[in-house]
Image (tube, rainbow, N blue to C red; front, top):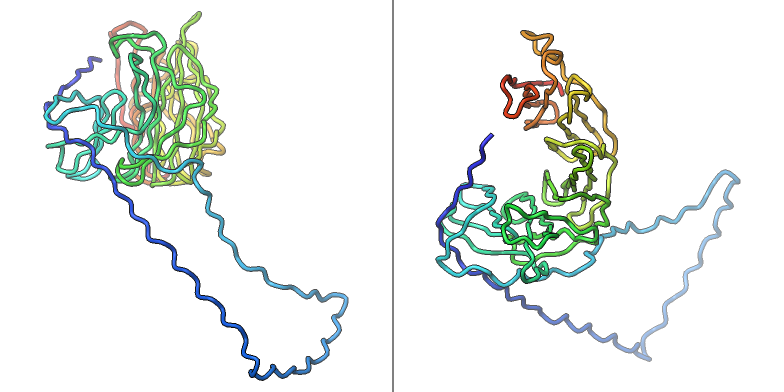
Length: 348
C-alpha cells in the first residue's frame, strides 16, 4: 500500500492569550453582641425519651458529601507559538469535529481551526521540547474544546522525522485541555511498562472525561515483537492501567460508549491461530471476551486457503451495530493473491 503525504499551504494565526480576573471574596458581616436587656430564652421541658427496644437502633443521618478530585497540577497556558503568520504548514493529521472547527498535528505541534481550515492557530501544550531533539505528539480530540496529547521523543538524534525512532518516556504525562487549547493540565506520570525500538500511543474517546489509550511498542530480535499497555481515564486527568493482551499487533480499538468496546489485531505469521480473533468488553475494559470471526457464506474455507487473515478498521455504530473489514493475503511482499470482506453485525 502506498501512502502519500499531502502538504497544505494555509495561514497560521498566533495563539491568543487568556486574561483571567478574580473578584475578592466578600467580607463576612460581624455578629452583633447580645443586648443585655434582651430577655433570656425560656427553657422548654424535654419529654422523656421512650426506651428503645433491643432490636431498635437510633440512627442519625449523615450529610451527603460529594468529593471532587482536584487536578494534580493547575492548568498551564499553551506554549508560545512556533509558527509565524503566513508560514506554510505540513499537516501530519487533521480531525474536524464540525464544519468549521477542527484540530491538526504537525510533529509535536497542535493547531486548531474555527473557519473550516482556512486559517489555523497553534495551541501546543507546554511540554518541554529540547532543542535539537525531535518530538512527536499523539492525540485524541473529543470535541472542539477537549483534547488529550502525549509526547514521544527521538532516541537517535535523527534530523528527519521519517527516520526517527520515537519513544514515550515511562514517566510521561498526558496533557488535557477543556478550553480548545488555551490552557493544558498534565496528568500524573503514567509509569507505563512498554518498551521497544519505538513506542507510540493510540487513543479513543467517547466524551470529554472518558477515554482509552493504548501505549504500544515494537522491537526486532529473532522476529518482530509487539508490546502494549491499555489505560483508561474516567475523570479526564488520571489514567489507570487495564488488563489486555500485550503481545499482539493491534489493528483497532473502538468504544461505542463508556462500557462497550472492541479490540482487533493482526496475526504475525503463518503459525498464528485462525480464524481471525477479536475481543469485546461490556464493563469499560476491565474484562474482555475473546471471539472468532466466522468465514463468509460464499467461501467457507477462506481461513484455510490463506495463511494471513486480519480484521481492521472496526466501526461501532452503537453497542450492538458493528462494521469491520477483513483482509486475507498470501505470504509474498507485495501479496500476489488477496481478497477482502466487509463484515456486519446488528446484534453485537
